Every structure is written in C-alpha cells, then in structure tokens.
Amino acid sequence: MYQFDMRRIKEYSFLGVISLLSFFMIFPLFHIIFTVFVDGIGTLVSTGPVFITGTLDDGGIGPAILGTLILSFFASLIGIPIAFAVGVYAYEYPYSVIGKATTALLEITQEFPTILVGLFVTQILVLPMGTYSAIAGAFALAIILMPYVAVYTKEAMSQIPFSFREAAFSLGVTKVKTVFLIIAPIAKRGILTGLLISVAKVAGETAPLLFTAGGLYQTYPDSLTQPVGAIPLLIYTLVQSPSPADHAMAWGASLVLLLIFLAAFIPLRLSIKEVRM
Amino acid sequence: MSESEYAIEVENLNIYYGNNHVIKSINLKIPQKTVFAIMGPSGCGKSTMLRSFNRLLDLNKNVRVNGSVHLFGRDIYTGDMDSVEVRREVGMVFQYPNPFPHLSIYNNIALGLKMNKLVKSDKELDERIEWALKKAGLWEEVKHRLNDYPSGLSGGQRQRLVIARVIAMKPKVIMMDEPTANIDPVGSKKIEDLIFELKKDYTIVLVTHNPAQAARVSDYVAFIYLGELVEAGETGKIFTAPESKLTEKYLTGKLV
Image 1 (cartoon, rainbow over the protein chains, first blue to last red):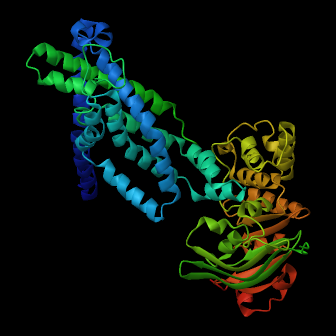
Image 2: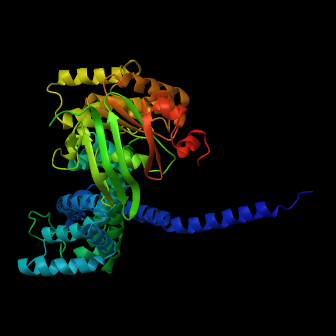
Image 3: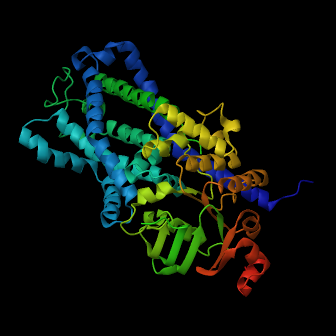
C-alpha cells in the first residue's frame, strides 16, 4: 500500500501554489509580447519597409523611430555623465551628510511621477522657447534617467569586496584612480546593465514627452530646437483616433518599439562579461 | 633624520573604533630584516594594529589613531610622510588572496609600478615583473600565461601573485595579515618557505592566529590579547620560557 507522507504532500502543494502564482505574474509579460507580435506583424508585412522609413503620410513611422533615437541619445548624453559622477560620490562618501542626503533624494526621485517632470521642463524650457523641442524632451528624459543610473552605479560598486580597495590603496594608488581603474572596471557588468535598463526605461516613456517633445510625424526632424516625435507618443496619439487603420498602425509601432528594445537589450546583456573573481 | 636600526617603532599606540578602544597603549620595536610575528586570538586587534602601520585605517572614518608609528625613524602620522609614500614603502598581503580580477597576471603587478612611476621604460617594466615573479616563486608556473586572468590560479598561486605585486614595488617592509588562513596546506608551506627567503631583503611583519606558524617562521613574536601587548621578544624565548602566565596559557591552547 502507498503510504501517505504528509511532509511530501505539503512540499508538493506548496510548490504547486508557488508555480501557479509565478505563472500569473509572468503571464501578462508573455501575453503582451505575443499580442504585440500577432497584431503588429500584419501591419509590418502589408506596409513593407516603408513602415520603418516612411512618414505618416506614406503609412510609415520613420520620424517617430528617429525621434525616439534622438531623444534617448541626447537624454543619455546629458544624464549619464552627471549620474555616474553622483553614483560614484554616493558610493565613495556613504556616511557624509551630503552622501546620505544624495542617496535618500535619489530614491525619492526614482519614484517621482514622470508627468511632473514633464510639467517642470515645460516651465523652464518650453514656455521660454515658445515651442516644443527635441532638447526639452531629451532634458525631461535625462531627469528621469539620472537617479536610476546613479543608484545602479552606486549599488554595483558597493558589491565589490572592500579588500580590493585596501589592496589598491596599499599599492599607493590614489583614491580617484582606485575608483576608476579598480572598482568601476570590476563592477562593469552591474554598471552597464544599470545604464541599459535606465536608457530602455526612458526610451519607452510617454508622459514626460507630452508637453515637451510635442510630436512630429509628417516630416523628419531637422533641428533640436523644433518639435520631435517618439514611438510611445505616436502610439498614444494613434490609439485615440477612431480609425481602425490608425489602430493597426499603433500595433505596428508597438512591435517596432518592442523589437528595438529586444535588439538593444539582449546582445548587450549577453556581451557584457562578468569579471570572474 | 638618522636611519633607525628598527624598521618600525610604535610608541604608546591607541586605536579607537568609534567609542571602542581596540588597541591599548602599545609599545613595540620591530628590528630590520627579521620576521616579526604578531599573534593572538581572533578579534584581539592584531589586524587593526597592522593596518595602522601603513595608514590603511585612514580609509575608515570611524577610526582614531593616537600615539606614534615611526618607519625607519620617520613618523608616518605627522607631516613627515604622506600616506601614499607610506604605503609605497610598506607593502601588504591580505588574508584573502586578492589579485585584481579584471587585470591580467602581468597587469596586476604592473599597476602599482605604473601608478607610482617606479619604472622608466617598458623593458624595465618587463624585467621588474619577471624579477618579482621569480622572487615570489611563481615565474615558472605563470611565465607562459602572463596575459591570463588570475581567476585560473589556485589560492596559493594567487597569494604568491599578491606577494609578487608587493615585492615589485621594492618596499622596505612587507606586512602579511594571516596570509595562509585561506590556503591549502601545500600552498601554505610554499608561502612559509617564501617568507623565510624574503627576510634576507625585507622586514616582514606577520599577523597570525596560529602559534605554530609563528614558531616556524618568525625571529621575534608579540602576543596581543584584548588589545593589549602581553609580551614580546625573541621567538625561541617566548615559546620556551614565556614570562606571562597568559602567554603560557595561549601557547598551550588553554586560552580561548
């Protein structure tokens, strides 16, 4: 006769419940990817390459793709150097008054509603300039990007054992060189992954761009001081339209956004080697 | 200032971690070109004291150091020497072998030399690295893979790489903080032999919680207990006829 083993039954039922809950958690992710593929691929195939290169009148989203690239690039250019420096500072002086304040403020800024960042940039750039612009959009994204980069940088560097710092100092290496030649390179994978996640996050932002970048889909942007489009912004606009053709286009644009995200994320993530201790 | 016959002279040294008094009024003289062992149970303050000899404690803002430490007659805590100069002259080997994992074997040794501009040409750099690896007894094992990362080395080999990294700087004193604590017995034996070899040219300060190791390799020994210096002197004398009952208890394994 098979004997009931309560311990085993408990173990399997616990495992079952956990698996089910995990499934519910990751199901939306796969559903989103699946739906975007199924609904987007039709538009992409029927329109052809024009969908990527053409303007809205040609049935394409070229200006939005370029806009997203421009905004992400300039947001990174403005945000990453500053944020990296702040992250290094918070790592290097964790117990100083400014260091503690910086860490606390960074955590708050991370959770800050992004639409308020958009309003702030409207106040300081859009209204004085009298127009939406790529600069304003990139600036808003940079503000959102910075706390993420800084926190990831600080955390990645904090993971490195103290003994490497001691070793560097005991060889007569100065404080600054220890950070840049020893700690940061050992923490490379963590820091770059943080950068990647941060840039991917702002590349998918919509709210802060509403009243800063404005939107431009009929022609390609030719100036940083003029309005510029972005894929998430275009999706938002298209979905509000009553026309089924616009909805189809929104699905196509969603697929392009997803593909850009995967194309940038997966190879980079795989190519950054862990430093083996 | 005249050169002292002692490599390190410690006078009335007190170290505090916050309000915690961890090293209490220690006086110590470490003669040149000898192996000086500092032994004591875990947590007695020996590693902390060692870190005060090359100003590594400066890294920790909660630590206060009072008293004086002289390196060949020069005070390392007053204006006489800056901390980078001190660390160049006092090399350090750590309990956990810590070659830099992102640098090749070659570059692990080259780093300190380049940072402190101790070599003038690439040729001199190559020669110095080969010399240091030979001195550390590692050259034969790594000469064909100088561009490999240290992750492929065994624990004992890594520790000898760290020792080569220190020797390459041509310091006057080499401090070792329980250098064999994380190494297998064969690797430990090689490092102990190396310590013996190195004392011809360098003063070696060895921290250990293993009295047998102190007996094997040192010429002088100091016994620290709860932050106080109990006894110091020639190794032979301390191990055969200790003056203090406490030392005797420690050496016979009756002190926990």
